Length: 428
Ligand code: CMC
Image 1 (cartoon, protein in one colour):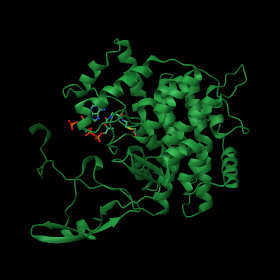
Image 2 (cartoon, protein in one colour):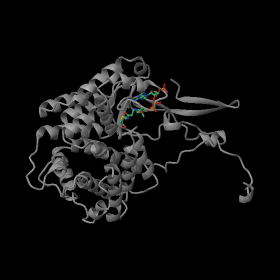
Image 3 (cartoon, protein in one colour):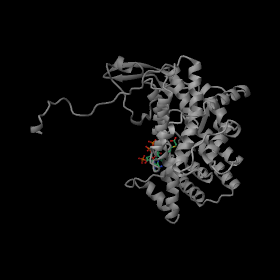
Image 4 (tube, helix red, strand yellow):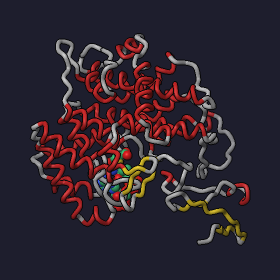
């Protein structure tokens, strides 16, 4: 293959280098486009064809259904690693050895407290506030309590900022839920594993000891790993672009949380469960909802189906489907919406509309069923996604800053009015 792409505009030919990634993906490097063409730009709404950066963190092949973090397959990681190992892998590039992992965890634990005044901010939210809005606000508020900006050229400062947020974030997650349910705000225990501690912080009742259930620990570990990174998705791109203005880590993460909230992105896990519940309430008629999803005059979409990049099974969905069966079985939970979900999936996979558009279940289709079986309230599902995605956001922010990427500032094609003289108010 040639190593150049040629673009002809008004009879003039311009050559652009082709760059090849380590997995043989090919991209046209158009960095010089505007310069050599005298200002011609590209238009690509939704960035469907635009690579915003070069990245060494996550590889995803949407046609083949492959997902790898730093070269390791998601299947192996979900089976053999724990969440903290995966977080370390994503952020620092290699799996930690036992000593590195122990130090990483110990450093995180040192920061697993937040200023008590955070409680006052939390108190100001109405109980009805959506946990994602609260989490985004509290994450941003952390900046006020940790105001010094990180010198990204100092490995030590970068490391400290990373362990700080990994220590504090689970507290914000747990408090967001506890406040909503009128539970006292508490800290975890430094004697527990990272995931065990999250569960204890979320569920410990004030009047009794919390007993760890290994089924819940394993299930949460797996779900967090599966959500830990997904290359340049909407929230990750938001984190990178926010950080590209040299805004700090915490506010960049807060921006990412807000982007994740939407139902087309992380908010889909809540939307899936609400959809399955609605189908159940409506008598379980999946065919009716399939018809709605296909009807272009109906805004209803089959939530948890389709993906910008996967045109094949989302490998995370495959793992989660098996996990849903296992967790519900192990916990002895019989949830009729699992059957509705399986029925919908079967119908969709055989339906020409979904086949033609290569719409498969995504990560959010079955995750909510597991969260629900674990006792996590529906409104917290997207917060759990954020908890899992945290290491990915951090890794991507770190990569963007250490590679000294320029400020993210897309162009546009202006289609508004051309110049017109100002009209006095009495003449309008
Ligand atoms: N139900 C019905 N039709 C759909 C669906 C769906 N869930 N998803 C896509 N389509 C149709 C869409 O109407 C379009 O049809 P046509 O070509 O006739 O106009 C075609 O499939 C292509 O869809 P698109 O909206 O152009 O694709 P996109 O890449 O812009 O959107 C998506 C991807 C994930 C936003 C979309 O599939 C969707 O809205 N899915 C439901 C929400 C969801 O589950 N989101 C979670 C994504 S995975 C977790 C994460 O990483 O955020």
